Length: 515
Image (cartoon, rainbow, N blue to C red; front, side):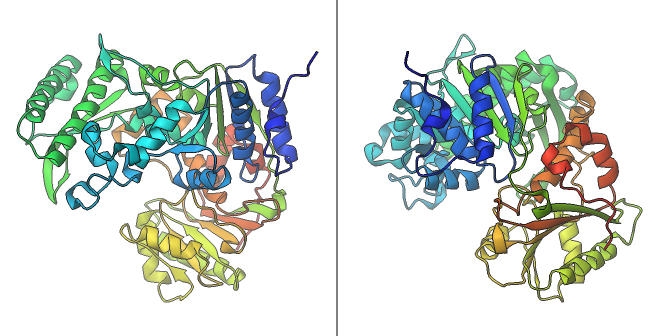
């Protein structure tokens, strides 16, 4: 009898599987036919992509399809470099529109003209159309979550979604962000100057639905009027999103948070109705995962609660060790600063602690992870020190790109909103300073609702960013770095969440040290 091929038989022949990849592969193979959903907590340096691609190639050998989904552009680029033969479909905004390459109003990308693709004279040459066509016909395709969602191309029939694309296996890399991305598909604003909704309408779901349906009729009429191309496309996208919101409100109204608020519109304060969801609705998740027989979830911060956010209550879970020695990725809580609002000296104390740490690493590059508000305040205290570089919201990409190119042997980048995605390996970064545990904003009604629904979510969401931030350096087995946590809130946060955290992170913590 012929021996059945295993996942490792399809591992990249130019590489030797690491012990951690062998462990992950054997465990997955043993659970493949008993658990539909496999959830693996795999730390940085574990080689998730090569492990996952061996499963995809094993599938392809049997004539089965695999969708490899990741929300991070950095990882998408890495996958494209490592697996050049594999098709990748990104969002339409990443492709130049060949029909309108110089149209500034449409920004020359395909997403602005999708509704006109059927008229396009260059459709056969279009890279977006080409990759999309390949996705329908090839065994393996790499997607971001939204490009995968929209590839399924539903049409409304009896108010249900009709799917015309499905995969036999779905692999999600860095799955910790996918639930929030899918929920974000329902973020919707109605400006009162565009639709005169009644005051306090958010208190009644039937009244809200009726009002939004009236707005939908107005948009339908506008779409069928004499509009310019770019305006028609904008209206079409609004109609599609509103259709999703209405369907969700009718099926699962308890998941929606609706606010009547005032927000900026073209630098003016304007009344608006803001609609959001606490989690992706069940019907959307059912549509997203479709008829897939197998689902593999991977992340370096995959808590046991995360598969449930994607609608899975029955799954096999594996918490893998880190392939990087714990002494090469030390995490040191020094509890130097209380970030409570009552501490008026917090910024001064932070600046002093950062300078002390910088002096410990005189000839090494580092990263300070801070909130935008903290970074702005710290600049006044650190700007005189030539090692530090800062960014604002406008030049963030340029500053990060310059830092990641290795400029300056002792440069320290003070970064905000950079907890995920940076691959600061080797001499690019030898130390990380985390100034604050990034608790979700309690002034946000959506945050309050999510915390009320799940008491552990609030703390775990905070800890997720801490671990992601610490993982920006020490990227492979021969790499090394140290992370300093300055926030005194870390110790009680850790105590509350320890039972849920990856073992590889817990073992890296060095308690009892001072600056």
